[in-house]
Length: 428
Picture (cartoon, rainbow, N blue to C red):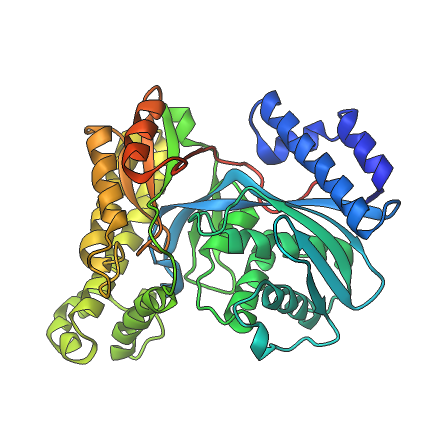
C-alpha cells in the first residue's frame, strides 16, 4: 500500500517493473502498456474517491480451458491456464461498512456489509458476488469492512474467458490484502469466489474458472477432494512449441442459457445418483457400463452419453499433462481434438436443442478445421452452447487464420492470447 503519488512514481521510475514481469511475463512493450493502464486507473481512483489515500494495485486474469470440458463439477480433472488479459483494481479501505466499486462503463456498485446474508433481489448481480465474497471471508474469521475500488478490464463479458471468475478472484485478492494480511492462499480465494457465485449470485458452477484465474500459468487440477484440490503447475506454453493460442467468439446469442448449462451437471448427477453417489468421479466405469440399460430407463439416453463424456475426458487430462511435460505438443493436440469430438458427440454442448437453427459453435469449428488444414487443433471452449471455440494455430499462419474466420464471423472475433505466469496478484 502506498500513497497515490508514491504509487505513480513507483510505476514511472521502474521500481515495479520486476514485479509486473513476474505476473505478466512477456516483452517490454507489453510491460509499458500495463503501466499505462495502471497509471490511468490510479488517476481515475483519485478523481472518484479522493487523492492522497493509501492505495493498493491488484490484478486477476481471465482463463482458458485446455482440457477437461465439464469435468470439474463432477470432481474430475482439468487442464486450465491464466491468460494475458486481466482485470485491474485500485483500492483503499474506506473506514465504513460500505463497499463502492466503479468499473469502466458501468454505474457504481454499492454494497453495505452490515448485511452478510444473501439478498434475494441481488441474485445474478455483481453486488451479490461482492457481498458473498465478503461474507465468506468474515465466516473464516477475518474482519472485512468497507473499501473503495476502481476496476478496469480487458476480459470482456461473454468472451468465454470467464470475466465473472476474474472479478471474483480480483475482489478476493483485494479483500485478502486489505483485511487478511494476505493470509489466504490462491486455492482458498478461488473457493471463496465459487461460494459467492453458488450461494449469493445463485448460479451453479464448478471451481475450474476461479482456480485457473487465481493460480496462474498452465495448471493441472484434480478436484477429487473438492476441499483440497490437487494443483500442479506446468512450466510451458503453446508458444514454446511454435503455436499461437486463439479463442474465437462464435458470435452466438448468450441469453437465457443458464438452464442449458445446468442440465449438464443435473444429468450427470442423475447417473451418479443411480449408484447412490454424489458425483460421477465416485462411480466405477465398468459398473456404469454394465448398468447402461437400466440407467437409460431412469435418467435417459442423453444423461448416459454425458456420463460417457465425463469418463473419457477425465482420463484424457493426465495424458495431456504427460504430453506437455514430455514436450510432445503434437500428441497433446491430438488429445485436444479427441476431447472436442467427445464434447460434440456425447456431451452435446455445441448448440441448444431448443434452437437447432442456431449452430454458430459447430460452424466456427468447421471453418477453423478447414483453415488449419490438418495442422493444430480446435475444440469447443468452456461452457459451450453459444460461446467460444479454442484453436491452436501454427506460427506464421495467424493472420491468414484470422482473416478466414472473420470473413465468416465478422471482425474482432479472433483473440490471440498468451499464457500468463501469475494468477490473482497484489501488484503493490
